[in-house]
Length: 346
Image (cartoon, rainbow, N blue to C red; front, top):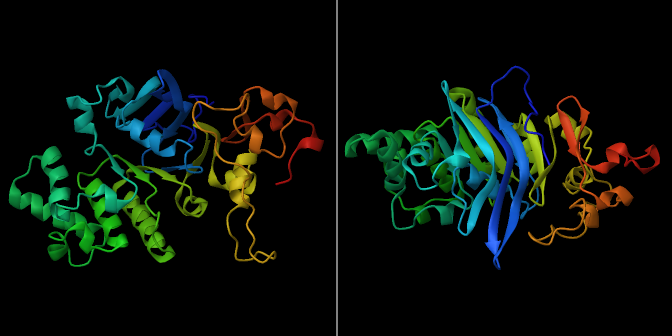
């Protein structure tokens, strides 16, 4: 669970405040939550990293913000307060197919989807797909739309944008397809960019280029970014704050220096221990977290991480509360109240 009153940056006004968000699917005539009572804040010009294993609910959280939860899923509870000028809008209260969310979606809040080869339509050119977003939100004519699509490709470092604009997705490399997806997302200068695994399936050189590109565009435009990834290395280089998600809940969040140097939740510690290190002395053997993420609707009693945790003790059969473990650092774990003899070494 998270406390919606938590503020990462003292004195700053968040662009988006999410509180007690729950997303559920109707399975076998019963509601099954896949995102459970989460909260976080995203600030202008800053990046919030949302990390965790596949199946933890990260992508579903991003889709919920844009009211794109696939059916039969729905936002069952919570608020998503979006601030623009002197106006506040609760995204959770909007009709998911209504005119207001359609104006916000793609124009003010944009998303880079996973797997650009499947996210891009194979029968339309890159320029046509970028142009569709521009026409929808800017109402431009054919010539201006094409020119803006070319400029969007040039802005994200696509070589020869005047010719690439007429290419089909299959004619581009993985790195160029990802840049095209970023160009589409940024074509209308959004205030918030949701980047869902933007470096997945790319080699490390291209990954570094994509991260550098997003950082430079953020510095240039002042947009906020929600970076969804399982790659802790990407987060170390980009995020201003990190939220660790497990089984549909945020179990730890705080600044990168606290998350990496003093992780307080055993799941976070397990994620960090499983990252390969060049200086490893044990012949490069990894330390995976045992077990798998529990399926929605089959959560264990108490702490959802308890069956995989090497530090579980009696209180873990009850849901753990969120506790402050340091400045701007919070963890959802009973170990914070445990005797010193039970505390894990970090």
